[in-house]
Length: 108
Image (cartoon, rainbow, N blue to C red; front, side, top):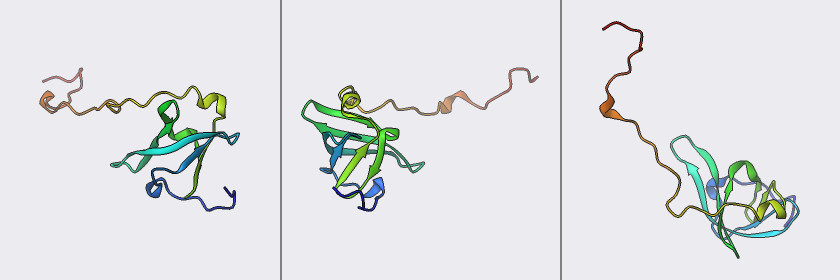
């Protein structure tokens, strides 16, 4: 890995790209890139590791290049990364049957 390699967008990050910690410990490879497509926000990574799939939150990603993803956390911190929830994260939706919003102090 060269530190001179140009950074790339998370949108073109390929599965299988190596993931290393800030102290250059090899963590694993990218399994999945997580994003909020509606708001164009990078949410994090799912990384294949020898211990299973782990979730890496976006603020823990320091740099993305075509050949390696470098994290802001060291190897000790990376050992405590949470497992990837196979069901994904929680989903939220608006309650459209609730009707219009009214101020509680407003007279009807």
